[in-house]
Structures are given as structure tokens and as C-alpha cells.
Length: 554
Image 1 (tube, rainbow, N blue to C red):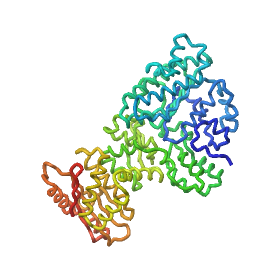
Image 2: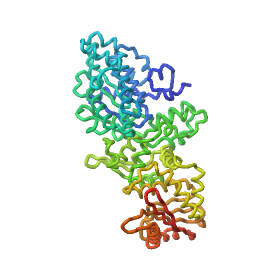
Image 3: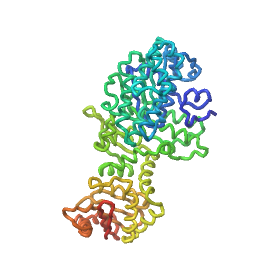
Image 4: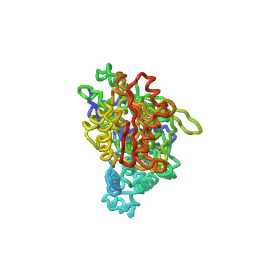
């Protein structure tokens, strides 16, 4: 039985070492026959992007004899195999490991990649280079070239390779947006965008030495910020039909790999855990999770994809999001969907201003799926939902981490015990301590204060697995903030919570705010909904906050 290539993204190594390979070689044929000169193909992380790009390199690289790598694959039976195999000079850069916290270190990492690529083809380019070009080549390899020289380095390398081989080049850029994501989280986004814009423009804009270009990443970063002026680039996102079955595993591919490892009886399990993605018309499984599930000796249904990343960006986006987004999060965690407009051009520096970008980023990154899409006025609208149990785990974990960063799980249990038992005095004391310790992880201000407290409480209450948590639903004569109902025992305490920020114009003191919150529960008759469900033992409580101070009253 063949080995599983877990963590191996070098195509030649996968084939030579007799690893199991899900045949995606017709990606080559589709690319060759595409009308696009440059193709940007965004896909979620760990969906086989680097392995596919590596396959392109070994197929096209001039001067190699790599036919044996493809002899058992579908591409070997095509006309394109005969006419294009090992016919083109290739430039290949992968940014997947460029994740530095400073702009300077990031640039050094990219310079090193470019230097290595020049060094790899040095013997091919040095003889035909001019005297001036030789000086630039040496300075790039020695890491002493100017920033401008590095920004123009891919166009120059294209020219030098064309002069040597008299054949247009293929430029492969893998995970181009990894340093951009990192720059956004580490506050050097503008500098990073400027460098990447110049580098990619140099490689692809008006490059007469180019045959094909392929760029992979997770997202398409807005044309205005990075792809400005590149009129020859075509984007094929997960909403499109091109290359729809070339990244990730289709249903048939998933069933075949399970059968090949005598695990056909596990299909329903992996479908529930790792299915749920749709690219074009194809249902796609998460390939990383499938391979790791099969490779696990006990075939445990673990969140393998979830554990490949810190999910820092997603966590940050949820923290800064509005109350409307946090309501969406609550709906997703309950298994529902939310209809939203999607934009494939994500503008990072507008994430905090336009939540359409947050929904779009989560969708194109693989954290949400589109149940059905509607194209209206050249804009896609999708019913967004959590794709599978693995991603559900990620959202739950992010919420739990907010809490665990500030206090131990035993304190959380103690806090919840005081709440459901009706010990409001102890609940107020514990909750106040936790707020002071944990809310330092939030940007609490008057604009988002209520949203943060609501999300924070929901994050706590999600640990009450025996309780139904109702939030922002119609009850009585209004919309109640939070209701807690025990799922099985209707004699247990039912809790109605009204959250309120002190309004300095209407309420001068916390006592006034607490009374007004309790008064609202009575006036809006929230208890009607609770009694209708058969609960008679009802606790009505007000939670009032001002900055990091919080008070509770029943």
C-alpha cells in the first residue's frame, strides 16, 4: 500500500517516493488551454495549492526529462503532454513561509527567495547577460541589490531566461498573500502592499517574455491595492467554475482514497466532518483533513485542518466586528445561515469599515460555505453557513480562547454554577473579576461596548451544554437580549438577562441603569415566552456595564 504524503508539497518527491497521489494532472491541460495569460487561483489553505504549483514546475521546466513523473497520470494521454512537456523556462517562488512580524524581516525573506531562484538558473542566464545585467544578477544573489532591483527582478529574470532558451517563460507565484495577511496583523500593511504591487507588476505587466503566469493564495486582494494595472490577469475563485475540481478532493476522489485504504465504511464520518465546500458545481472535501484522518493509526475524527493555523486573523476579525456580525456568528453556531453580499476583492484596510469584507474573507478562506448563490447586478449573494463540524469546532475554539486567555476553566465552571443556581451576588463578583482580567483582549469603547459584552457573555454561555441559549429573539413585546432554558428539566431556573450600557444622558448612576433594565424586562413582558415553554421558576436579571466595570441585579 502506498504511503500518504502528509506535509509533502514537492511533486517529484511525492511520485518518486511512491506516495499516494490524487491525480490532478489535468490542471495542466486546463491551464494551457485557458485564454488567460495570468491566472490567479485563490483557494483555502491546505487545499493542495503548493503541490499543484510544484507539479506545474516539473511539467514545464525546460532542460529536464520529467516524463516519467507523469506516465501514470491522466495528462500523459493528452496532446498537451507531447507538445508542452519540459519546453519552458520556469520561475517559481513560494511565499507560504513568509510570516514575519516586521516589514524588514519580511523583505529579507522575499529577497532570499528571489536570490535562490537566480542562483538556481545562474548557469543558464549569466553567459547571455550584459555587463550591467551581470552586476545586478550578482547583487541580487549576494542580497545587496536595491529594493527597486528586487521589485524588477522577475521581469529581468524572464528576459534573461528567454535570451538563453528562445522560449517564453512561465512564472509561478505560490501563496502570494501570506505575507500580506501577516502584515495586516502586524501593522505594516501599506509598505507590504507597495512592495508586492511593484513585484507582481514587474513580473506580469507588459512582460513580452511571458507564456503563462499562475498565482495562488487564499484571497484576491483588491485590484486597487495590489493588482492595479494588470489587465491580463483573470481570477478564478471558489465561486467560479474554472479549475473547480483541481484543488481539494471531489466526492469520487474521496470515496476512492478511502476504498484504497480499506476505509469505505468511514465515508459518512468524513463527510460530516470534512465535507461542505462547493467550488463551481463540484462538492469538495478538505484534502488535508482526509489525508490526516486516513494516516491516523486509529482514524480519529479530529479537527486536522483547524490545527494547522493559529486562526489569529479570524479571531481578530470576530473581536472587532459589530453586533450584527456577532448575531451572525450566533446563528452559525446554531446551524443556521445568513444571506450576505460577497466581494472576491478583499480590501484589508477596510475590514473594520465594511463588514462585507469580513464575510467575504471568511468565505473565501474556507470558514464559511455558500448554500446557494444568486448573481444580481454583477454581485453574488450567498446564504452563508458553517461548512462542517471541523470548522464549527474552530469557531467554538476561538470563542473559548477569548475566555481561557483570561482565566482558568475551573473559574469558568464556578462562574456558570453561580449563574444557573441563582447566586447573583457571587456571579457579579466573579464576572467582574473576569471582565477586568480578560477584556484587555478587546478594544472596548463606547461604539462597540454593548456588542463586545453580548459576544463575551455568549462565549461564556456556550459552555452550558445542557441549556438552550436564546439571544436577540422576539419575546413578549420586544427583543430579549438573552434567555437561558434548561433543555430537559423545566423545573430548573430559567434566566432572562437584559444587558445595558450606562447612558450618561438618561442614567447618572449604575442603580438607575439597573432599575431601568429590570423595568424593561417587565414592560416588554419577556417572561411570556418563557412561561409559554413551560418554565415557572424564572429569574430576571439586569447586567449593566460601563467600560470594564459591570454590575448585576435581580
